[in-house]
Length: 125
Image (cartoon, rainbow, N blue to C red):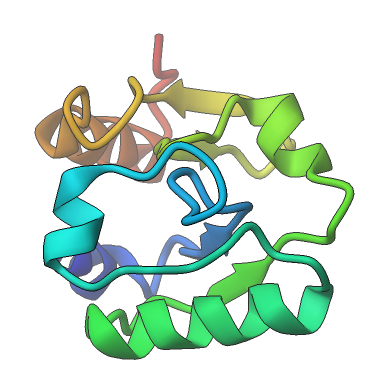
């Protein structure tokens, strides 16, 4: 993702949107989170969510601007963001590309192609 950001950031706005915890310690925790010490409870306040987002951004060396979702989880619900999704939104506000659930169904090459087509003014299907 960082490679795409570096390549297209002068023509496309990129954002990471940090949503509710997919695998909180007080919910469905997964072994990989335990072994990697990614241990967060489900956020009880926006401040907690913001702290977790900052920790994630720093820990994963994310240079893409990060937005933090409000506690109503409206973005997560509207876009089916959990656990992770890739979206490309056109200048008209319509979804140009909707990727599969990540990280297993991410296709960065497909997103790359969609961005190239959008930047070239070709309709993406």
